Image 1 (cartoon, rainbow, N blue to C red):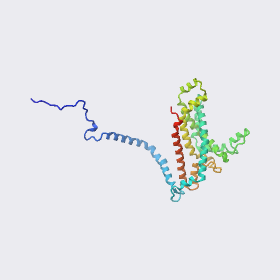
Image 2 (cartoon, helix red, strand yellow):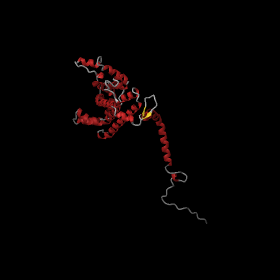
Image 3 (spheres, rainbow, N blue to C red):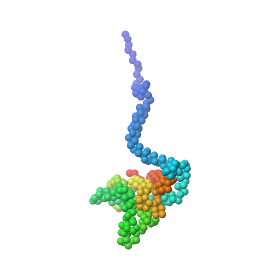
Image 4 (cartoon, helix red, strand yellow):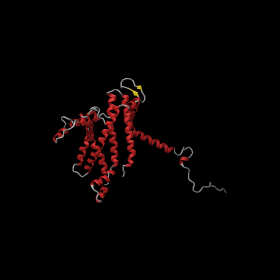
Length: 322
């Protein structure tokens, strides 16, 4: 008689993992292949945005960095000068004047555009009849051409036939020279710039106001907090993320101010409104110093980057994320 024998089995033994079978490769090979395939699809979908970014932003930046190391008048061959262009720009009084004018513009523009945009946002956040139409009207200058807006303000602030000086004359005030007076030329540009950008700031702050929970405002009102107390202790802290965004974007745009200056004053009178970007334009296309213009543009980029990094690092002290 034949007795059948079976191999003993160990209690609790698990079958071999598929990834560990002979000839199946390493355990993580399949996962890495899936990740690589997913990364490939992501890169494919990013190409429509990456190609213009490389062609029109990163490419020109690298080209400007290369030009900044050469002396070039846009016609003759370039000559290598190393960092001489950067040293020349840092020691040039015209460059310091341009940075000073740009800083003066920012100091006048930023508070005006923020306070005005906040006032409009608070007003249009209330229950007003036709507030949707008013929001569209206030946003209309934002989508208008800067050249058109600058020319309109140049006419409004004309010292001789301008509407502003005519209105001031009706109340017995002798209007200033505005864009023809070195003392008033920069305030003229600040006024026009703030008027045009009020709608943009209004929309950003209005979105922030509508994200604030209404029950928090109502609870403060029930506790007896007045309008100013609610604004200072509740609205502004909860609006700080929107304020942070507005400040960062406005500072970046302020450092790059060009269109309105070019159209209204051309940098004059007596270079009182020549900003950094206008100086870059003049170096490249008026004086034929493309290397100096490229060096100055990189110096401006370094300033903007440093200011932005300081803002991002300092936001923890005053930005409140609910």
